Length: 258
Image 1: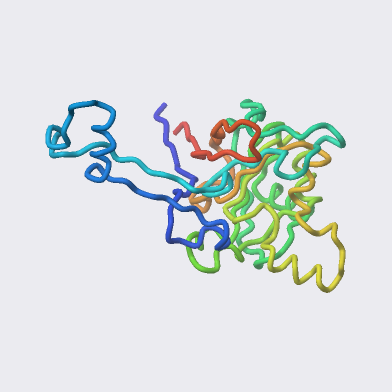
Image 2: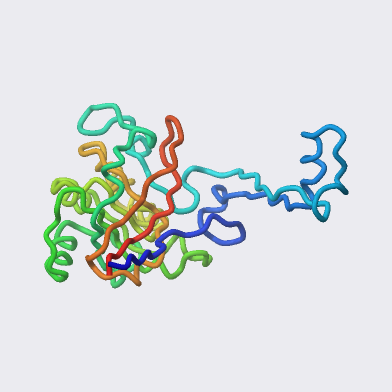
């Protein structure tokens, strides 16, 4: 059968509102002309005019966070412990068996920005699409943020997944989730407003903190989820292996066996 691959990742780039301003990536592009002097330095006696068209190599220097671009968060990002007291695993310790499994999409685009999805919301959507969660399903959430990636309001767009919604999935064996929003949780601007009114610290990062009870990973800043059906494909999201890190970049894709 032919295989069809749908890219559900965003590019790592500058000049777009992909993150809050202090966390934006910085990329220095060095083209073939600019690198020629550096290249010949490796080969004593070589002159730049001896290189093809005087060109060296293209290379980029990155000043970035592991949470820039589409990335997989490890349990260590959420807290120092998981599974009610165990040491939280870092991205290089995440079982690869978690990262290539059937995908399930929850369509939450109708929820208003800042809404915190509940277990009932998850259960209702699963009933609507006719799917029963299986262990290791990779569950991704399509929010209103997806089509706003790179726009000035992106970080403040989309609903978030609350603690009980997250635990609903984890208790059924899900170990990787994902969202096309900036964060698995609701945009911070809305949580801050609610905290100012209620002074309840349990609402801060509540979806992430569910990992303290059951260790899991999630993918943030996914793309093109509106192009996916609810089920019928696999998702691959193997993370870049960074020793002891809280996250790793991933070229997340949906794979269809048409």
